[in-house]
Length: 306
Ligand code: CP
Ligand code: NVA
Image 1 (tube, protein in one colour):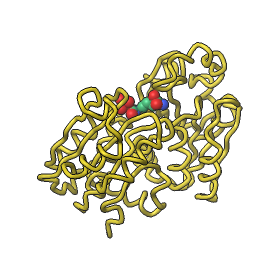
Image 2 (spheres, helix red, strand yellow):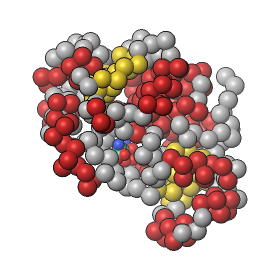
Image 3 (tube, helix red, strand yellow):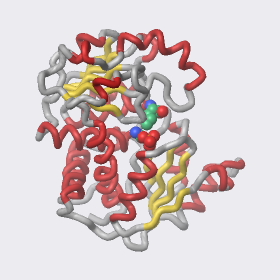
């Protein structure tokens, strides 16, 4: 299998073709079974995170350690970029030390600026616009549970946020039908929806109706109603989101084999009920684990180790 991703960035899932995504997921499965473990000895991953993270930070770090590489946590509070050193300067300097850089920040444009100035692979570890690494782990989980992706239906309920936008692109690329149900003023960006529609002949639906979205779906997915940076608007948002809560009543119209996914952290009794999160349908821990396997595949690919 030819590695098509060597030296490439992952800023958006739209950076990948359907074939590249398929290859990454296949590699993720091989990483998980242990059939493949290339060496990243003497390679260094930098993590530059302007927002909190448990899963992404730890799964990227452990993935790099398993590959035999090293990780530097570039806390913005203790580096000059946090004191206003321009991104274009920081990026050119970091690229001379590091082999790959993962960034979590607010504006997608900041990650794009890093990528424009750093001649090493730059990975979007979450922006306000997208969370592509999350969706790599999500698709790996769906593939594991159902043995296929093509033709499955995923319903995402809640805020049309970064996770929803990456799911739209990722599902479209993977041939998964996607339905996104949000309050009208919290729909995903029009550009992303149109882009997703252009990537697939399968269903790409954006609706206000949670019930029809869930109808017959094999995967029900939700995320917090107020993302990092939106905490102050939580009180104004929450009343509008109540009908989108993933609970046992709503799941009655899902497929009998339907699973429940959540990128985590979860807010119980807000976007998801405790009963559903802790139910047999919930695959959230497997999903969180798969972040590590998918990112190991991504690191090995962009570093040219496979
Ligand atoms: N799902 C996810 O990205 O979790 P963290 O914010 O803990 O990294
Ligand atoms: N939408 C959430 C995802 C957290 C992993 C946020 O951006 O806060």
